[in-house]
Length: 48
Image 1 (cartoon, rainbow, N blue to C red):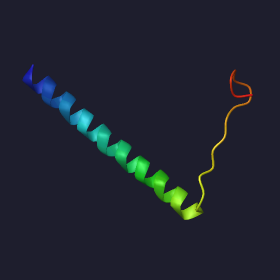
Image 2: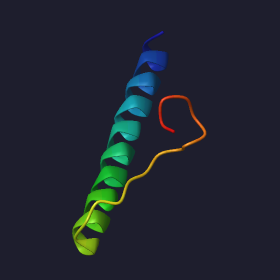
Image 3: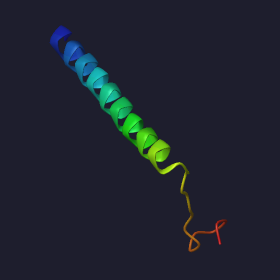
Image 4: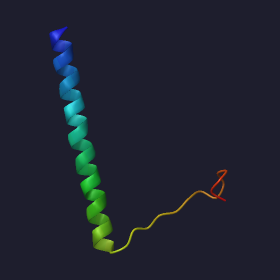
């Protein structure tokens, strides 16, 4: 039981660090371009 909890805690911690690194890369890309480019799918209800 204790080993399973440690494994789960380690996995959650690792995923949080990976998410933060990904978000930082996205932010750096936006800053480098100088503009935020976004769009939507006109085929989805509410977006067309």
